[in-house]
Image (cartoon, rainbow, N blue to C red; front, side, top):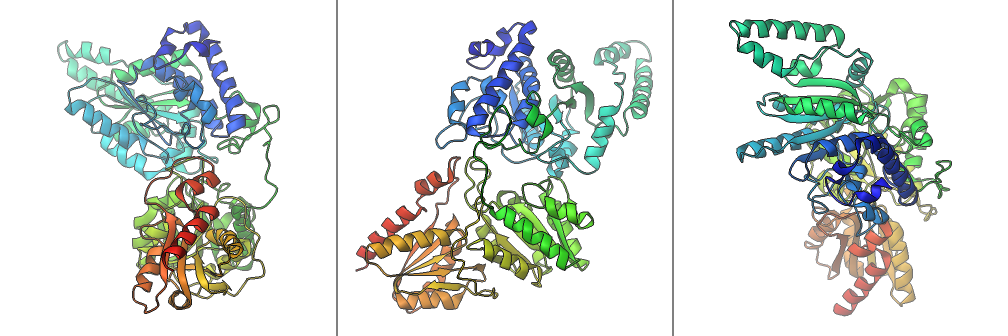
Length: 621
């Protein structure tokens, strides 16, 4: 196999050009086989195989710098930089990340995991290069989906001022996670269907400038060139900004891409190379269902069907069902997502109430302020965004929603540990950053029924309110406990004395397991379902402190600024003699891996918590 000859960076340059397509096929077969076992981002990687090969043939890594926007399409890049053996541990605890990591390879020059960041990072690397007098090439690769994020345009606005080379590769596959939406998608679609246009070489300009009155000739040609482009390629948006545009070019034609990249390197400004690729290329199931294979679970190679299909509903399914029911009951209920109608469970709502569904693209900041406008206009917007993505809209939540006390519901999916995507995707900060905002109200359901009840409560609440729920199977236990939702009021599940577990959301299930183990060891154990993190139930904390020897706060959130800190602050002002044990995620980033394994590693699993409680009880006796 040709792939056997690639053991490190730049080894691809030893491959005969006549064998490039053979190598591309070997890479696709390798990725399909490995990801069918480990799971991972398949569609985006299959679509970027030839593009990645062309970039590695063009660049000299690690001296040159290659930045991948989001980074979920970097698997071929990892293969071509000597990390083939690492695919056995892809996305597993202690193994290779599914995203670029500087600590993993010198060829990964910038860690990525979220969208629309590559142009800003690349511009910084360009300036660092120039200030230090270096001559290396810097390339940022950004997908057309990421161009729906405003940060990309902030960076382009600054890149347009450059008088030095900076290459931006626009990997255009008409997809982000789901199909792209909006004006950018429409514009690029026009460009894709346009004929190739005349491109006058820099060398021609330089030659003309040397003859008498050559400057006027050049200026005339430039105007003619611009006019011609405006006729042939609608808009010429990038050139109008001051960024040179080259393309579109076939992203599966390596020789064509190499020619355009060489041309791009000769410019003395920022240049966009527009590359057209097909997401999922080479694997029929991924070509037919690109969204399904964006982040694939292990699957059967012959059929593409998951080898471990879900048999029970997850929290996203419950949210989806409740949203459709709320939409039927109240015409003022509207839904907003940031490019993830499938991932957030809003696809059914979109199909049933298309006029009340809004996909704003990868633009979380806009999503929140847009929702604020909808609320100010008399509607009841529900903004469904993953926890780690909502971080981007902190300022908009504070300024545009909470200061005005607008009734916006934040449905925060993937709150807590999410597993294999690692540091950039763990939803472990939302309780902390939302709690810091005056006027925000925060709930967390203990099970699937409580999520339903909280959604119904939230859309009727007259102010900003958030509901955070985890990824994965919706807990069906504790069905017998279903007291009505009351603002700021916790729910007492068991009152037995000695130890009181005060648990938030997903940790109520863990608290049940801890209670069972403690009972078996002879300890009596109460459980309080916190329900609200803000406002916190002061009466529940007071009762726990006055009637137990030990209070244990439990949350799937970092310790700093979380629920446990609020409990501690409250207990400090009480006369009760109970001690407090805070169970939370350490104030650190959590790497990728199986969620159950991660919980054990950071000490928030039932067994570890039980042991810590026993030690604490012995200490306080």
